Amino acid sequence: MAVLPLVIAPDKRLNIASKDVEVVDDAIRQLLDDMLETMYANDGIGLAAVQVGVHKRCIVVDIARRDGSYHPMKFVNAKIVKKDPEPSVYTEGCLSFPDQFSEVTRPKGVTVRYLDEHGAPQEITADGLLATCLQHEIDHTDGIVFVDHISLLKRDMIIRKLKKAKKMGLLHELPEAKAVL
Ligand code: GNR
Ligand code: NI
Image (cartoon, rainbow, N blue to C red; front, side, top):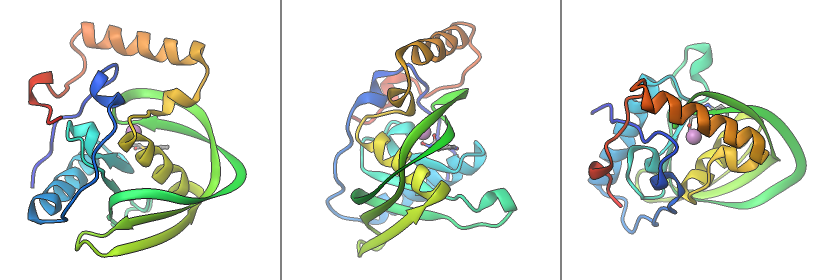
C-alpha cells in the first residue's frame, strides 16, 4: 500500500480520457488499494486514477467516512447507464483543485454499471452525495473536471489561484515525467 502523489490543476493530464481496463488483475487491485490510501490520506470522499497520473478507468469512493465509519467502494470501467432527470445542486471540491469549491448542478440520481475488484459486472443506483461523487469521478475518467460545469468567470478565478499557489511552491504534486499516459 502506498500514498501516491496527486496531479494538481491546471494540468493537461486531467483533461485526457482514461482507457478501459481489459483485465481486473492484481496490478489493478493494487492500484485501487493505493488510490484508497491516497484518498484517505487527503481526506477525500472519492478519487479517480487519472488524479494519480494513471489513465485507466478506475475509481474509489467512500462517502461514509464523515461519520467515522469505513465503507470503501471500488469501480472499474464505470459507466452511467441511466440518469434521474431531476437536477441537484452540491458544493463540490476536488483533490486536484486544493481548497477550491463551487456549486455544481448534476442529475439527482444515476445508475452506474461497472466491474468490481474481481472483474464481475455490477450495477448500482445512487442518489444524494453518492450520485454526485460517482458523477464527479466518472467525469474524471472522461477527462472532465468539476470546473468544466461552472461559469468561465468562476473557472478562471479558480485556475488563477491554483497557478499562483503552484508558483509559490505551495502545492505538492506529481511531477510530469512520472505520469503513466
Ligand atoms: O473529496 C472530494 N469531495 C467532493 C465533494 C463534493 C463533490 C465531489 C467530491 S469528490 C472529491 C475528491 C475528488 O477530487 N475526487 O475526484
Ligand atoms: Ni475530483
